[in-house]
Length: 467
Ligand code: 6PG
Image (cartoon, rainbow, N blue to C red; front, top):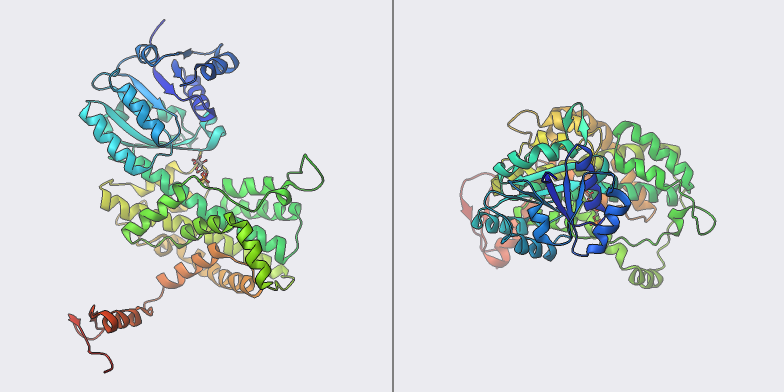
C-alpha cells in the first residue's frame, strides 16, 4: 500500500468531513483520533469504500504518511493543539508540515510557529470556515505561517476549498499568524452581521407584529441584493416548524446566545490597535446582555418599561431593508479596516483583495457583497475605509437616511438596536470633520495637566484652568 498524502488528527465531525473532502480529490488520507473507537466507527460508517487509512496510535499514523509528512490538526482549539504538537514533535522529521485547522487564538499560533521552527518543522495556522457542510463540500480556507509549508500542502488545500469562477477560496495569506488572524476577524464580522440580522428580525416581530413566514419572505427578498449565507439561513430558520409542538421553532428558542471567543478576541485585538469596531463590539456585548436573562427579567420587572405597541409602517420595512444592508456593509468595513491595521502592525502584508476573494464562497460570511468589496481593495493604496471607497459612496448616501430613521423608530419603540446604532455612529463619526474631543482634551488638561493641542497654533499647551 502506498503512503498517505496527508494525515488528519481529530475525528469530530469537522475532521471527518475535511478528511473525506480531501480524499474525494484523489488523495489517500490517514486518520487518527485520541479515542480509537471514534476512528473505527468513522471508518466503518463513512470510509471503507474510500482511500481512508484508519490508525490507532500516533506512531503508525506518522509512519503511514508520505514525506515530507503533512499533518492536519482538526482538534479543539487551545490545549489539545499543544498536546498533539508535543506528541508529534519526536515523531516527525525536519521539513514535515503541521497544519492547525482549528479556531486557534493567533497568539498561540505565533508561539507554536516558533516551537515548530526550533524543531525544524514547518507550520501553518489555518482558519477553516463553512461549518460541517463546508468542510465536506468546500470551505473557505485561510492559511498563514511558513510559506514553504504552503508550497507543500497548498495544492491539496486549494483542491479541498470552495471554488469560484475557477479560483479556489484558499490562498496563502502571509507569515506568522496571518491565517488565524484573518479567520478571527472573519468571525468578528460574522458576529456583527448576525447581530444586525437579529435586530431586523426583532423589529419586524415586535414593531410590525409580522409572523415568521412573513419575515422569512422579507429576508429572502432582501437576500437577492446581498446573496449572503447568513440572510439565507435566517429565511430558512424562520420557516422551521417546531417538531416538539405547535408553531414555529424560533419562538421556542431561548433568547440567550453563547460564544466561543473569536468575536471577543477580534474586539480585544481592535482595542489593542486602537481600531474602532463598534458593530462587532455591540454584537459581542449583545451576546453578553442576552446571556443574563434572569437579571434582565428582574430589572425589567423593577422598571416596567412601556414598549409602545407602535405599529411600524410599510415605509419602515423599506427603511429596514436599507438599514440592515448598510449595517451589514459596515460590519465588513470595520473588519477589513482592522485587518489593514493589524497587517501593518504584525507584518502580515495582507492582500485585502485576496481576503475578499477567498471569503466569496464556502465561509459563513460569504456574500455577493464580497465582489464590490474586492474591487474596492483591488488597487493600492487601499481606501481609508470601505466607507470611503468610490464604489460604496452612493450605497452609503442612499442608505444612511434610512438607517437614521430605523434607529430613531427603534428608540421610540424602546427596542434596543445596538448593532444598527453602532453602524450609524461609526458612519456619523467617520464623516464628521469635527467631533467633541476638544472638550476631552480640555478636561484632561484641567484635571491632570495632560496638555492639549490647539486648532490655531502648533505645539502643546497647558492652561491654569479657573482659579
Ligand atoms: C465558521 C464558524 C465557526 C464557528 C463559529 C461559532 O467560520 O465556520 O465561524 O468557526 O462555529 O464561529 O462561533 P461562536 O460559538 O463563538 O458563535
